[in-house]
Length: 151
Image (cartoon, helix red, strand yellow):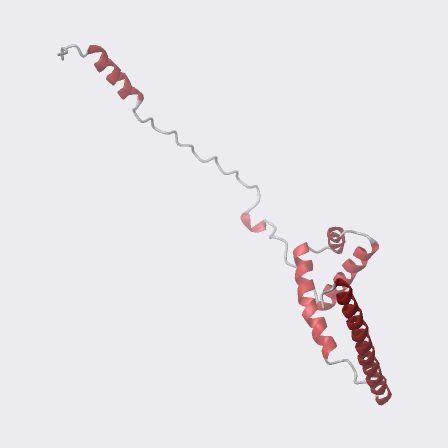
């Protein structure tokens, strides 16, 4: 058996490991001192106020943007030149669509008697032409099926 009294180097190694594993205290950082302002807090300028546009101004800006895009400018440049944000542009555009659609539904006047007669005549001619086209396509389809031997 090994001599138990000969534990010198092992005891020294354990002692050095214990010193290494001791937790070290973390340094705490102090907050930097706040700068003293020369002016009192009340005189600071408030954030920019939100600009409320009227419906007329909104529609004018939307028309301006559309004309600039048609002229060849990019959409982003047109929006910037109008002085609004992209978010505002898309919001206004979405809000304006349903209003325009609702305005055009009930405004369309009823056709006069001669206009309604023309409309009926055009519808009849349209039906006649559709029948002719259907017959012609049916005949061509039958001929192709006959050539291919599918009938």
